[in-house]
Image (cartoon, rainbow over all chains, first blue to last red; front, side, top):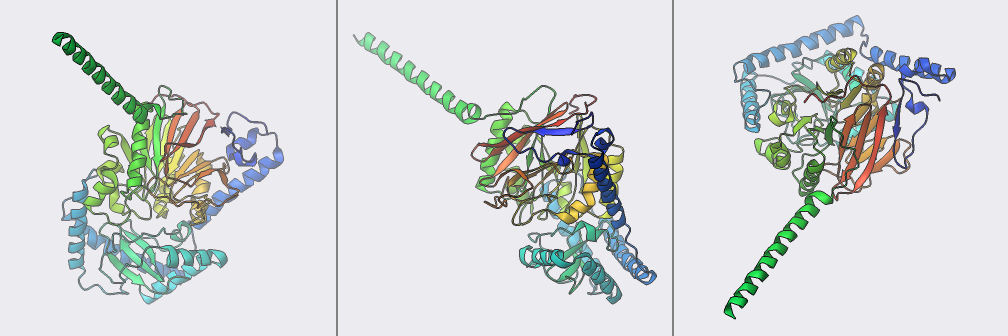
Length: 222
Length: 305
């Protein structure tokens, strides 16, 4: 393969150099003499970009859209409440000391717990929202992926100490298991203050700053 | 007679003193200078940095590796350190920030070395406010050093907001070097975790579209240099505080070079169209080195910070 002005290569002492196709970038193609390889690589690149764009625009039926919108509104209402609480607290700076971070989190937890003293399980994850979310999760993981994901969540994740209680803190030492990126793009969108989390068979909403469990649903794992 | 004896005593004391000083100088130079074998060119105006990952244990081994970093700092004046996440394992009280980070890297912090952190699955979001992680209150952020554009991503939660931000930011980025770093590896030969294909499905097309050149990750507690994938160079450096010994799958088609026998960190130097790298173990052994060449000439090679 002839290299051009836009190509990249790598050299290592006594190392395998990888395949020629590995060294291609989409942008090189126009300059390459190998037309066949060029077209394949171009199509692959376009396909990958198109796949990513499709993932971000998952289509829902009108009924599901209504359910998702209502769920998103309930989460936003929580976000508004906790924002109003945080606004009354000293702001955490972008170059805070560890003591300031610890104190802020503790106080924030206490105040939001007090503000949501009557919060109940299922207020945000209503039955229709649970059904929709279960369906999306189930659809996302199939075959081997499903088995692997179950193994990750049930066997490997260090989340055994997480309490299944609304308005209780997610333990600091508990692992914050990675949320699969493709799933996140399909689920109802959350405000930045709230996160989805898998814990065992359960699916939680957790506040990213005060660490409180906002709500949870059971039997979420496919 | 007494005078001659006195002179002899003084002479012997002088010799003993000189020997003592020489011994100290020899010991110091062996421990902190000569034993360091730099394979990087160490040129003027280079962007010099370290890559460390999965550090936050506060263990003796983490400290030993930090001591090796300090030795290299004396011959290779790196300006900053990229952290691949899992910066604080377990609890995240104030005392943990000190035990698992500040105390370990104090000599580097004292020398004003900046640490740029990304978040792993053991990191709370609140770490983004920590003064020494330089995250500016953001879970994902961008900064530039000379001709190099760095993107710290939160692979633990790659939601639509972050994907949109990354697309927007890269669309206007004209830097010749675009480097992304985050916790979960899109390609990996690890037996425990392996490639994060769900993450790869979302971010790889964006990297390809906008010409991201190099990706650094952690999560796997070993070092691995992946064979170039669609023109992108992936490195895993997740053994700077924890080790998963013997975890790299033997004969993996992804592996260009791997090291899973001890803890390690990476030294990087970017100058013009070349990125040199050297990987050093806890026993001060160089376990990998090489250079990535970018054939499009950068517009300048000045270091901005």
